[in-house]
Length: 430
Image (cartoon, rainbow, N blue to C red; front, side, top):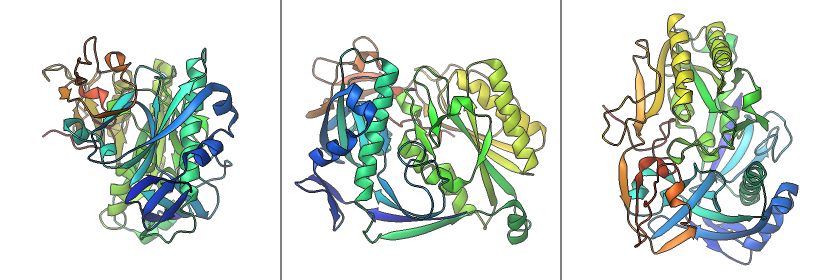
């Protein structure tokens, strides 16, 4: 399967009376975007208002509470469309050509959906911990209809963000990209013929699926309902996996993370050179022990059927999913498949507590995204997009986190993407 990504560099975002991409500037007419967003039934029914703002790198701006971050894209050639099974029909994606508005993002914010939402600071010490302080952000501030239930609200906000990103991505359809990159993997037989002797490596991608607003979607299907299965890596890069969860902000995989998964990107960098990047195995993180056993059994079975020499496993969330992480490690190691784990830590504010809820002596290669319990002080910003009403109850905050001057004392887990378990951050340990 071969996918071309055409990257259109966005150097600035401005409100305008038109919507267009010209000379690297994204011009946004909020009314036109809002009209498109409100064409969705859930959005009309459950969102009382949608307002837009812009946040740029280096500005004294705080966005909170953050729900999701989405990169605008448009499918210009090949089967399928953006966000299949949700926005577009459920055709298989991962081939053809997709244009990407690189450097900008749609951020959904406003009244809280679940307590595990986050903060993005565009400057100051908090900006060092989130990749989204570096993007030009079109922020949607949403307000639910009074009495809306949480699951309905979450779904409406999710659709609103995806539709806004779809509308803006469409503006890049006829724009000549600044850079085009091609990504290709082979079938099993073809891969053996073209890349003989190279170690066969797969990516075991754990998806957050614990319910109660902890959900991820694959081609529009709640991944709680799947058994471990295979995806071509280019499907992941082309929007097959979408976030729908409210896990702690620090290690939430937003839709932007899925589209720009650094594990996939790094494996492609070595594909055909030092490794044969065979496939992605996706598996879920359910709450019952039987489900964990089933999912890890299936994932290990697929890895063995594909004769993989090694797998990289990334987790999402912490605590309960640590058991899934270790099961995936142990079962692959016992069948001779070298396994590397990517996780983060909840080691206490002093860093001295047990980092994971489960462990194994077979977990000999572990990469950490940092300690989410580390305490940080976020100074006040000149402008807040959204509301500070929920700072004290967001995961990582506490009663009194929000100071009278607008500064915030909290754990690192309050910052969106701070300890991301795909490695999409700046923290680790050695």
